[in-house]
Length: 103
Image (cartoon, rainbow, N blue to C red; front, side, top):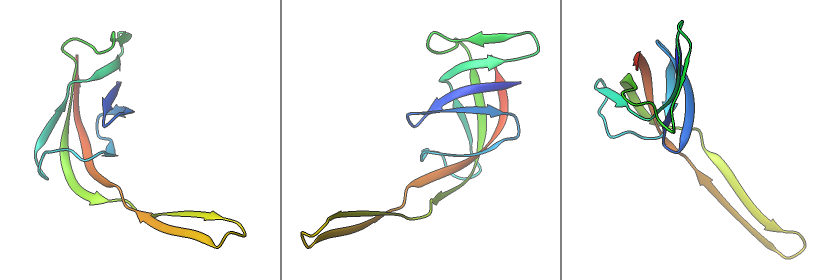
């Protein structure tokens, strides 16, 4: 059994027990969190597809930790023009564990 959920402008294929790093959520570490934007659920009975979301579909998860990804370096330059800019970026994330799928 798996589901496709939408959070943080991205879509994720999840199943029970999966660990996942998603965009920052408002929940504290150790709390339960519910995703209600479920796009698809696949079970033994078949596949349910939402338009765009499944009515009554829920995926529950436990928040494990908050953190930051590795640094990504951004370099802009123009050749032969004596122009170069360097910058770095670290994106925040929330690590979750999927605990249940219903719908």
